[in-house]
Length: 305
Image 1 (tube, one colour):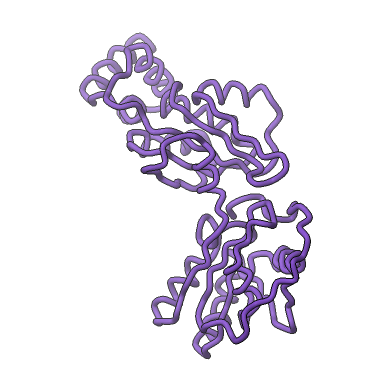
Image 2 (image 1 turned 180 degrees about the horizontal axis):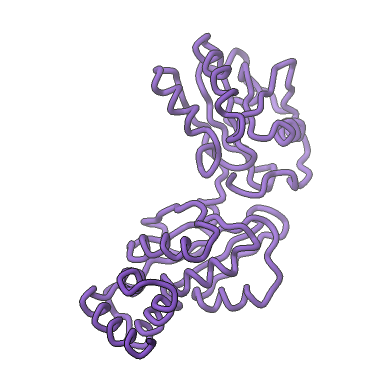
């Protein structure tokens, strides 16, 4: 899911929403729901929730609460659960209704369906059969964090969740370290400090970053600092509350990494990896030519033996 769900949605007065008369067009409607503030549902999203023949939700209780806040009546319609654990059994029923010409509104627990949320297989199956699929876009923790980070937005990569183990996490980071784009990750609160430390080691200690948490909620917080500083600060504190979005700025232009930074990256990598893998990780982190990194790695490995 995009965030920690909308169970903590602030009170939002019901507006007595009135949907346009008539049925919702047949097909699968992907409806974005608030990631924190209940006011972030769109009018089009409310329209789909009010008029769909069938409602499919990752968390049926959260959807009932959201509809109640906005005065959207259930009016005898069914809400079926659709999530990663029951997809294989729930998907055939939803597809059958779509084939009959029904309108189905699919919502995640919070945020935009398909963005780190269930629904991909359902959309693919519906599209493969030529069934209509449309989206009512809206709230997304990924885009909210990207906009609030103060980092470049002209080119970015959403990389989802990194592996929980440090070695696998560093390997995954090394694969995208040299990408000239802002990187966006979702992370659990308890792993945020460790993830930032690995990012500082692999991506570069001075690379600009932002930690975004409790987005759109009362205690929303955006912390902006170089990776090493952010990692050190977070390590000295209790884990943050609420799901975290980490935004990392692109690498500096050109291979301008100095020898001290290269040595630090290689020393750390050589303590954990083979020479070949250490060179790959350090090269991705620094952007320096492979021959230069390899030569320095050979020299350092002799002193470390």
